[in-house]
Every structure is written in C-alpha cells, then in structure tokens.
Length: 485
Image 1 (tube, rainbow, N blue to C red):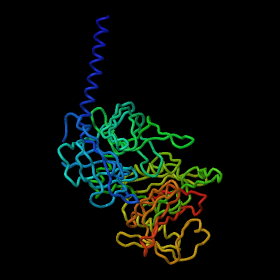
Image 2 (cartoon, helix red, strand yellow):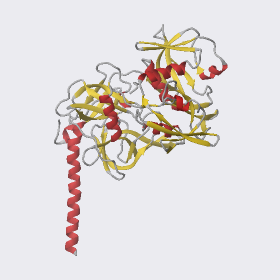
Image 3 (cartoon, rainbow, N blue to C red):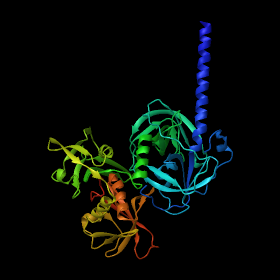
Image 4 (cartoon, rainbow, N blue to C red):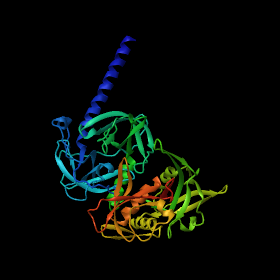
C-alpha cells in the first residue's frame, strides 16, 4: 500500500509539473501576439466605432506610453495572410481620422502605425489594420471554436494601468452570456476570475491551448457609500464567437456590422423623482412591459404593426421579454432577411405576429435623425458633406420648452458636432459628421430616454459649444426609454 501511495504521489507531482510547463510554453507563444495600443491624436467626441520562444524579451525594458491620450491592449489575428489587431472600441473611439493617430507596440517595443478598419460600439469591438507592416516578432493567435465552459482555466493578458505590459493573470470562467449595464457593450460576455483593470481593455482571454475565448472588456463595481468599489473577482470578456462574427462582417461588409431592420419603435416609460436635498433620483417603471410606440413608413413592420400602436410586447421569437434590454437582446440575435415573431397584446388579449426583416442600411439612420429632430415643426435639419446643421425657426411652445432645453436663438443655424450625454460628471458624446452619425447616436441614447445635441454657431466656429437636452417623452420628469430597430 505504501508503494502504491508513493507511485500515486509521484504521478500527481509529474502531472502538476507538466501542466505548469504547458502553461509556460503556451504563454511563451501567445505573448508575442499581444500588443499595447496607444492613441496619440484625439477628438473631444467619439467615433461611431513572429517572435516565438522565450517571452523574457517582453520585460527587458519598460514601455513608455506616457504621452498617449488613450491606452489599452490588443491581440493580433491573421486573415487571408494579413495581420490585424483586435481591441475594444472604447480604446480607439476618440482617435482622429488622420495619420499618426494610433500606434501599437509589439513584444520588443517596436512601434507600428495602425488605423481603424471597422468596429461596433454596441459590442465595444474594433478591428485595426497595419499602416506600417508588422515585423517578424509580431505573431498571431486564433479564436477557440469550442463553447467556453464554466470552471475552465483561462489567462488574461494585457497592459494593466498602461504601465505593466504583458501582465498575465489566471482564473476560471465563472459564468457565460452576461448582460452589462450601459448603452454599449451589453451582450455576450464571459465572466471570469482572471483579474483585469484599466489598460487591460482589448487584450485576450485565452484557454490552456492558447486560443482566444474572449476579449477583456469590462470590470465590475459594487456600491459603496462614498463611491464605487472595484470587484477584482468579477471580470468580463466579449465571447469569441461574437468577436469572430463582428470580424467577418467588418472584413466582408465594407467595415459595417450586418443587422436586421424591423422598422419598429418600442418604448417603456419611467417616472423620475428627484430629492432636491440629496440630489439623488429615483426611477420607477410605469409599464410592466415595453410597448409598440411607432412604426417606420415603408418598413417590414409597417403593415403588420401599423394598427398595433400601444400594444404591449410579451415575447420576441418565443422568448419572454419584460424590459427594453430583453427586447433589444432578442432583436440582436435576429439576422437580416429572416423572420421575427412577436407576441403582443392589449386589454388582456394576445396574438403572435410575424415580420420578415431586411438589412439595416445607413440611410435608415439618416431618416431616423431627420424624423426625430423635425418631429417638432420648430426645427429643421440639413446636411452637407461632413456637416449637419439644425435651424430653430419660431418661438417655443410650452411642450417644447421642456423637451428642448436650449439656448438657441430663432432663425440662427447651428452646426451639430456631437450627440450623447453631457453631465456634471463628464461627457459621453459621439462625433457627428453626417446624418447617419446623428441617427446612430440618437439610437444609442434612446435607451436612456433622452439625448444631448452638442452644437456650435455655424458662422462662428470658435464659439464655445453648447449642449441641448432632448427628452423623448417631452417631459423631463419622465424617461421614455426608446428602441428603434
């Protein structure tokens, strides 16, 4: 018995040692496919988004990113014999559309210029292409084809705090298909215990085979009396299958993500009460279910839903929905040119309708922008190449005094430079260069129930930009959270 026990212990030691050596060898190969991303030229607004062997070379000297405005991580993949860099959209979304704006740094600290090939702010994903051809020290990784499993060992690699490149942390997959708060980066996240922090954004989460199972994207915070408390055991990475789909769309659809177009506006109202002593607000849902609030003319939904305005939505594609996020998630899983079912009802009766989707085109976003702004006849919106203008034509009515909290003057024309949210805590504004940009920004912020237009005087470009808040409900005490799809 003693001999058997000794042999078993020897086998256990050998197994542990082999696993450790395998992890070390895997990381030696993977690290050279990881890069640090630096953005050196930025705007005030955001865009609508082979070295192998010993890895010690990564730590020979410190990488200095102190002069970069935005910093993050990334990893290199290969498509058709060419290398590309994957990272988070929020790392590069403020970069200027000009030469010298974005660079990546390899494992040997060599600097290469890159530019945005395409991306999707909703999933917080961007694909960069090399302007300067990458050197031989830059290798690539592959996405895992296997479905991630809870309990699976994983490693996060990146540049935490933009000061410690090629930092590796390990953990396990602790949950899958998480939904996150916020207006972008919401669906399809792996939760893991592999610790990440600011600067890790865009780096890979890899399995024991060195395959990418996700893109490290977000960290979790818990409530605390004087602020938010970082939760280092709760970390989120966008699932590999979503990264692969987005990459394919960017590569083969002119840099644009393919989405279904339904032609429906869906809303849910929330009452807002503000305690003027503490300045804290309480938001309470008014309806139990989202409802159909409008339909687009000449859209797939027009004939099916034109007489269903005000109907509650109970299911999408057979899945129960209770709020706007769940409706959005069901729509996001619907492909263009396919059928979508909705179970809707009013006054206790229910019915299921079928809509045959089309593909969302940029012109749809242009139409959304124009229809939203001009829903108040006091305003018109026009555009030229690279510019969008809004004109205020007449005096306020009581209704629109609440809806448009504006300093605009009658008959003046203003240039729209951004759309998003401007608050005391900071700005989160998307860059507007055309009507489609404006429509996309409105679409993002529809889920908040309001959006801010950032404008300057058309004839005085040096004038200080000003923001105008637009409440979709027409009442600042009611957030009409709205989805256009």
